[in-house]
Length: 173
Image (cartoon, rainbow, N blue to C red):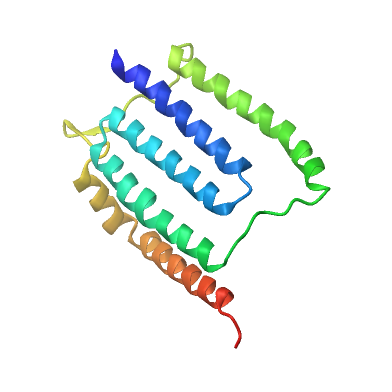
């Protein structure tokens, strides 16, 4: 009985953090809002029974990646975002399709939660009687055997991004 209530509380907190992320004018405040989103997602993973994925969400994303984001933001000395006069027109033009798509996704989620649609994808995959959703051994097997190349490419891309931020932030003397 408590799990659905917690789900809706943390789902609302996650959506509110995401909206706050978009409307903030200062990049540091946006990064802090993203930490709220990632923390809420970790609680949602816990409610799904994926303790390992929740721990990775906190340690890797809310911890390491957000420290990296804040480091790069401070290294670049990013101030308050400047708004140009024509950006409100562009936001209005893009807002209508985004609102329609968001309402469609919301209606689909409500239909799925209430059980109106019977086409659903079902629960977590089960192989050999073992639940693989959030299983550390299954995640490690997939990450370091099946998806090793994308994992390493992502690591190199993050390293290149850090080096680019340092080069951009370097002051000429």
